Every structure is written in C-alpha cells, then in structure tokens.
Length: 424
Image (cartoon, rainbow, N blue to C red; front, top):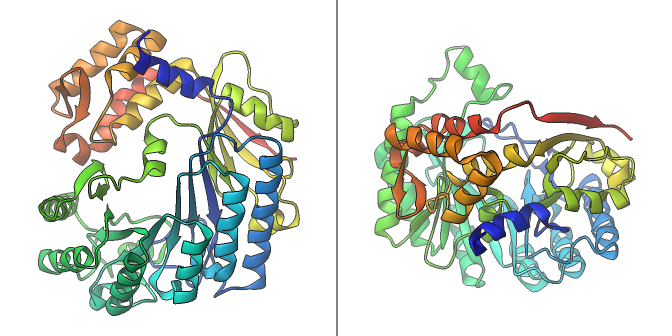
C-alpha cells in the first residue's frame, strides 16, 4: 500500500475529527433565495447569546474528553454569525481554548453586521479568515435578493477586513434577477479591487419554500437557464484567473497559498465534527465510537460500518437548554467501506486536483479494480473527466454536468445506506 493510499485509510481509521464546524442559526432577516437553517432574530438578541453560550459549554465538554485534540481547522457559519456581535469574538476565543491545535479559523460575516468593534475583536480573539456574504456589488441586484447592505457598505466592509490582515473571502452569486454580463463583470472587478484573497462563486438555485420559488411558480420571476449560468460562471473564472486567482474547487478561487483548508476537508475524506442546529459531522467508525463515549445512547455502528454521517435535528432552543451531544436528536447515515470509497471518489471531483493515485488505489481495493476502472473509463469517455498523469481530474464539462459526473461515480457504492434517527 502506497503512502498516499495509507492517507485515505487513515481518514477512515482516525480516532478524532480534524475539522470543526459551528452553526449559528440566526440572521437579521431571511434573504429571498435562502433555504438554510436560520431564523431572523435581529441583532445581538438574548436568544442568540444563550445559544452561543451553549456551544461554548459543549466545546469545553468535548475538549475535556480529548475529542478536539486533532482539530486543525474550524469554521463558524450560519445564518449570520456576526449577529452575535461581540459574543462571536468570545466564541472564537472559546474555540481556540477548546482546540489549541487550530491553524485556520474562519468566521462568516455579513457586511451590515460587520461593525468595526466586532472586526477588531475577531482578529484579537484569533480568527484567521473571514468569509463575507456579499452576493453582488450592484444595488439594483441586492434589493430583490433581500440583502440588508448596499454595494458601498459591502466594499467598505471588505476593505476594512483586508486592512486587519485577515485572509478575506467574499461570496458572489450569478444568475440573479436584474443581473447582466456587464453588471456581473463590474461586481467581480470591484470585489477584486478591495484586496480579497479568496472568492466563492455560486449560481443562483431556486429552492422550494423560498420567496424566489413562489415568484417563479407565480410567473413573476424567470428561472435562470443552465446555459446563462454556465456562461456567467465561465466569465467569473476568466476574470478571477486574469487577476491571479486559481480555481481549486468547483465554486472556489484563491490567490496562491490562500485556499481554504477547511473547505478542502469536506471534499478529501477528512473527518469533521459539526456542533449546533442542522450541523453535520462525518466520522470514521473509530471516531464515532469515541463520540459515543459522551453519548452512549447513540446507535452502535455495526462491524461493517466504516463511516458515519450525523446531522443534528434539534431546534436551537433545545440546544440552549442542554447543549450536550447526548441530549440532541440526530439523523444518521452509516456507510460501509465500499460506499465510503465511492463517496470519496465522487467528492474528489469537486476539486481541481481531482482523485489522486492513492485514492484510486484505495477505491480499487475497497470496491474492486474492474468495477472502478470501468466507471473511470465511462466518465473519461463521456468527456466528464480526464487523466492528468495518474490522477483523474474533472473537465469543464464535468463541472457543468456535475450531477452526471458525481452520479456515475456514486453508482459504485451499491446497496442502500443504513439510516437511523436518534431521539434521546
């Protein structure tokens, strides 16, 4: 077994998570396109602070049990974490104390709640990256999105954040109402000019139950076509790359050395632990058994289980009342070795680097060489992927037809994933 292949085996055999995610399910106001797990509560409410206190208490408990010793990246997402105000800064300090091995710590922020004292407090507490939800730098496009900031506020927030020395990323969205190729180019240019080192670029998705979905169904809004969005994504790639950014993941671009390690963890088999309402975790069987020491009533993983995915189903009020892992409700998926290997192959296609030789060898051993090689031949033959030396990498067509590429590799999993619901 090669060293690279041993690395993939080690992810499955890991005792402890290496990445940590905390979900803040609050925002000032829900955006028109958003179906995330978040609730509009205004700014710095008692409810939100109580929830943050509960996360801090659980961090302390997990740290005392030794479950955060191997964590090297952390990410505080939402919702809008900056609605916590200065409590977000102290939460970053709580994370640092609970997992002192963290090298990269990212917080999400919105321009309207990224006030100077919070920004300075985040830097002082040990935040290293900031991901700012900008979406557009055109006032006419921000209004239908339901954003609370205008373009000038967003640009000012980005520049202030950059001036602190943080690695600053911004989220941008294409295919939105009123957007044109010219306005999209202008948004990209203005974002780049602020000094950001990372950008995440997403096409608008019309999600069920959102105001945008109702508008499309009622005929008041046109659903963006796949071709239009593909053209805008290609335009973004060209403009960002001409400014020195490199695409490293299907939706992410970075200046050299500023790739988000936490983002990469999700697509490269790294075990991670999620805390909070709607937060997800992915642990190997041994890591899951370590978690069960704190929550012994969680269902056991049978001898054939290699990977466990958990999603917290508890409301934020329940977490605030009792933050312990054992008191929460979970949806669980238990994958065997073949399913985990197929999942790793599928997720690797989100990365520019694709599937390295070690992962392919790991998949052949877990799934069977003939089945894997036949699947690889199919995606290469259909133009969805190509060979780059011994590495399989996605093509531009593979990214545009991502569901087809991912589905072709997930077909290697076979069988039905064992699912459980845990209620304490």
